[in-house]
Image (tube, rainbow, N blue to C red; front, side):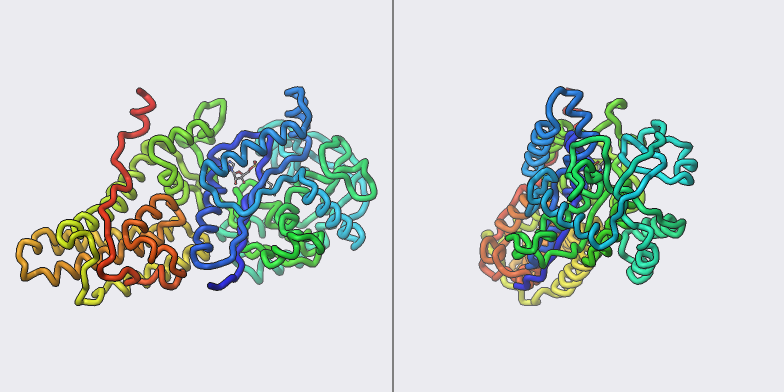
Length: 523
Ligand code: MSP
């Protein structure tokens, strides 16, 4: 087994919100990738967590008459509960109020200050209070002096603050983009960032004095570290960077740089420009790729609580109860806004996807192959005198393509590799009509070959679908070859022919046909 490390991160989520489809989406994508890499024998570090400081949390807590820490504790616990409800396999969950994070952020900011990348200066500009983001005059004018997110007016602000010398990294950043054309993906997003980068970079304030709920600036505690800087550092504080003698640093150092930071498109600038510049200033390696997905919308509109079209946690739980967790994961990973277009969430589309992919393809294929082996060969895998025919090659090619897609974070395309194998098996069954062949004993060797090829291929497809639907595919693996196959190393597990003649093949009912959820909800 190769212990080659693989690292993936989600954004850390604001604790002033309740978990909803957006959080579930990004985290599920990362989970599929993390499970894939574990399956392939890589040593995986999958990180998620909560972003707990800043004026927004301070204000929400005040509105409820509780302390910011009480609010953070309550909602961080809710995010953690949701992660386990969704079967997410994160290796760590970092909270920015944890001492390990706060200590390491202070050490890193101190290093930036001492190295001359941070200095004390005076700021005058436009501030988006909701987003806690500053804009230059040009940008503010372009936005009509309104927040691009919530439409509220930008406010004029003057402050003495510590600044990060972002402008000093303009050329190095441009060079990095030129040398790494896939640094930000999809490539249209890389072009967007490059366009804005070419307009020129200004130094950015990295401290605030107008609130206290944050990490104090080392050596000048009246200043609090800006929540975005604090938050970005989570990706390395969880690995012990900033505290070389910590256990985390000893055990996890090999996990930096990350293979992927997966984020939504609205936080790309922080990840593609500010974060890399901070890392350059610290002389640390940059993440290998940043994948910015688009947004789930509902019925063609932005999801919003006031429109009542928000897919919140109770709605998600409704889908779990009706279709099962794995069906939900499948819909997220294969039908979501992975690239540059937003994806419409609709109950009808969910139902169609479930029925076409899972009931009619995965479930049906596994059940008919299992049923025929049960009927004609007593439920054990028959010998195949044809030695797999074209199927070993087809499986090997599907596995290869699947690996390439997963490496590039093309999850929906990877999922298709598994589904396509099953569709081809369905095609062979329809063409060769084993149930007719079975009527004449002279056809027995041919029947044995066909059904063996079907079963071997279904097992391989099940392996490719496992990261998407871990529990259903575990049931499939149990039914097709059982333990000997499941615990084998990746090279063997993913190879055609891993099931031995004589091993048990079961008839499975993986995905029941159900009513559309709309009807159920309507009573
Ligand atoms: N705390 C910051 C991130 C700091 S990372 C160093 C933040 N948090 S957030 O709670 O607002 O979460 C934002 C993320 O949630 C988005 O980047 C995206 O991953 C996910 N989504 C939120 N709404 C979404 C949709 N409607 N659709 C898909 N994902 C979206 O920003």
